[in-house]
Image (cartoon, rainbow, N blue to C red):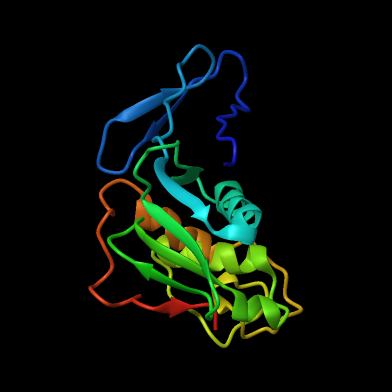
Length: 189
């Protein structure tokens, strides 16, 4: 997760008042207490069924944690019910989202056998659980372009628009589920 920081480039005696949209002004400056950023929504995942892809799932989750602030993906504790279940199978990679932030991810061996990058697959399918649709065809720089750039694409990080969409999905009141079936069966391709 990116570190949030508040920096003040103000002279020691200066005090600035910043109005918040629709709210009161907040004093910022020397001696003023910084306001805490909203806490990230924590989503847990269970990769115990991901077989040989467990490390790739952890790295895919880490790519999201490095990229966005409003949500954090963490492995579920032993015995804890996870928001996201990750399984390995012999088909094509896919995600079956539930409500926003819940669902099942399948890390399909078929794509891996064709040379696709396991961490990209994991990050892409987790992106569906975070509310993102496929964006294909698309460039390698777009995580949600999935398999369209070909097996040589190893980018595991969302682009600026994908990051912004996830931030919007998980910020404040915007915690609604995608339309029923909107992402059902979303896949890497």
